[in-house]
Length: 71
Image 1: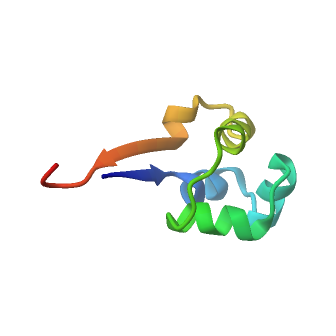
Image 2 (image 1 turned 135 degrees about the vertical axis):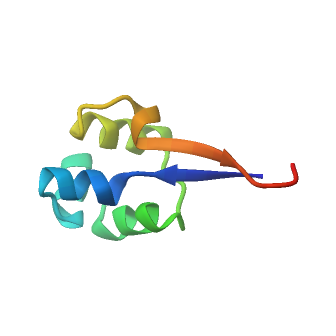
């Protein structure tokens, strides 16, 4: 099974954005941003693309996939 990693917290800090501000910019909720940051929610492709656009980065620079050991 693969794990989706992300750099949301790091990139938000870099750009001085709160979870609420990022949520507004992406048309999602603060709770969704929080869940994505913690790895408890997999964003849709659309949300992932909107997040990457806010940070002016390719999606795969914001999100990455890691294979779990033993697979």
